[in-house]
Amino acid sequence: MSMPYIYVTRTLTDSAMADVRGLGRPVVTGGDEPPGRDDLLRHAQGAVAVVCTLTERIDAEFLDAAGPGLRIVANTAVGYDNIDVPAATERGVRVTNTPGVLDGATADLTMALILAAARRVLDGDRLIRERTPWIWGPRMMLGLDLSAGATLGIVGYGRIGRAVARRARAFDMPILATPTSTPLTGDDGQGVTFVELPELLSRSDVVTLHCPLTPATRHLIDAQALARMKSTAVLVNTARGGIVDESALVEALRSGGIASAALDVFEGEPRVDPALADLPNTVLTPHIGSAGTATRERMCGLSVANVAEVLAGRDPVTPVN
Ligand code: DGY
Image (cartoon, rainbow, N blue to C red; front, top):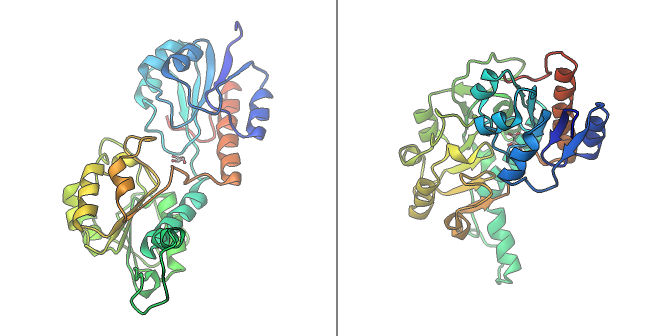
């Protein structure tokens, strides 16, 4: 294709696909599945803009394959650990993400996972599906009462962490959070005590992760961190799998170091360690934190809007670099 084109690595929502086609450039689109590496590099050549997702690794090799014509990589996710941002900056390529539009959806799923793990929703579901005889009993299938004063520890008090706090307040949960440099606005600080991570881990009944994956947060929750947690505690991760050392987590779940874990994200995603799936005290979902219909419309729409701005010679709406 001679005219520089827009490469959309995965099929977006219908309205975003219509928007991208309306930008007046040829569009090359991958399918529903992530492209293989060879296809990804091949399609990079000649692209002026790339709309990608968190499943594509955008690194120096990709950027060099694209060449000097590439102006923007628009990630359809708020997390951008799949992109080598310094390499893009060095080559004058803008990188954008989709902050703000998925906070509610991710916080909703976080609450669903907290509730599912604390109140043993999957255990109950399994029991019934397996046709196990049961009858109501005073000691039957007891779990953690969130609204009886269970403390929630939020690691990473950004937009999504704050959205989780708003929901947790409705459950009367005391809230701990790791310190943040982003100013608190509105009711952000209401009912929240800021403590360092070791104290948060040892005092919380539920620990939920909302920090980005960076070199500093990789394996933030390792064997030592897990050992600080209460043996009755629940760990929830809707951020990035690499924040948790999964082998250490499996060991803590097996040995009773912590009570349970609810995970939407995994270290080797989409591969899930079979040990996690074999454990009875895990709740596992396939990275669906932002998978609400309206949320995906907003994410895809924002990615395309970023491309439109950059191709028009303006600053993107939500720049990373
Ligand atoms: C994000 O936006 O980073 C989410 O993980 C996508 O679901």
